[in-house]
Length: 135
Image 1 (cartoon, rainbow, N blue to C red):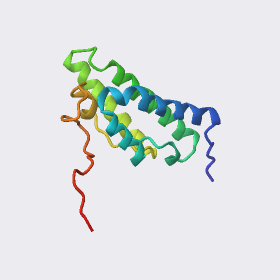
Image 2 (cartoon, rainbow, N blue to C red; image 1 turned 180 degrees about the vertical axis):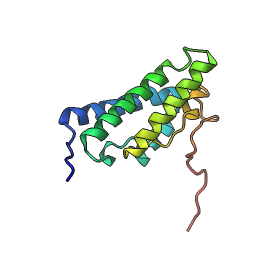
Image 3 (cartoon, helix red, strand yellow; image 1 turned 135 degrees about the vertical axis):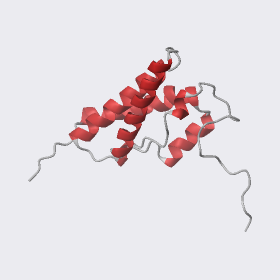
Image 4 (cartoon, one colour; image 1 turned 45 degrees about the horizontal axis):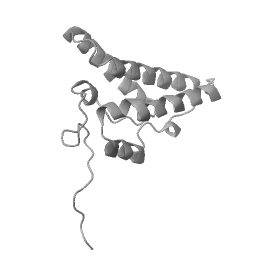
């Protein structure tokens, strides 16, 4: 028999706040508004997707906080060794998010290569079709 503790209401609220922070402050630094709207539509960081256990809630909260911290510090440290360590840490936390049921279809290179936001050089793989078939 295994005992599993459920997450608390406060933890779920904290996860919701972190997800909102991502969409309001972090993603706009790296992606145009059209892609951010697409992320919402496809369910990126959908909080209902994870099993509501105490362990998973802590892992999700911690991973989100670490990713936010890394992305907000991005560009301040120009040393290559620091950048490599941050990239490994970012990749590990992205992996943890996905393992815990949060849809986060990004890699560290989506964030660490460039801070320029423009429509032509977008780093996401998703793109709206320019033409559609007629029936």
